Image 1 (cartoon, rainbow, N blue to C red):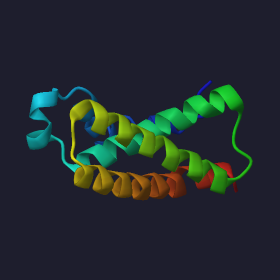
Image 2: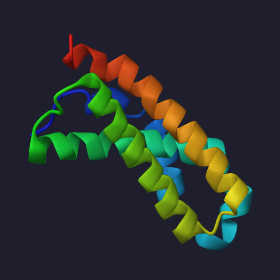
Image 3: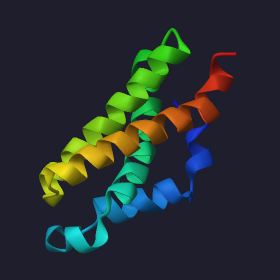
Image 4: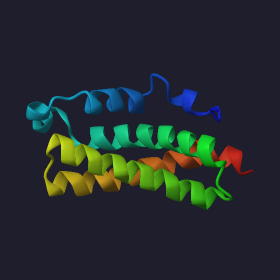
Length: 116
């Protein structure tokens, strides 16, 4: 069951970043995977994970809870990419910060409609 707004990210910069990050080969990560690229990918992953969560558990009770979930999903993606792509701690912290910001911005644009 889709909640209907993930399609808005189809062919977006976030979706393109997601594909680039997830499909990147480990030895090439430093040259190709900036923290900005990873944070964009994390925002897309957060939207996908949020939709999956809502399909399995229903919509969160509040917009604030939805934003928390989006931030958590984006942080989890960054952690996974850091572990699998071998980024250093500075890149990890920058990517997490940017991913949280993007997830919050995305949730303001998309999720606010669901809670008004």
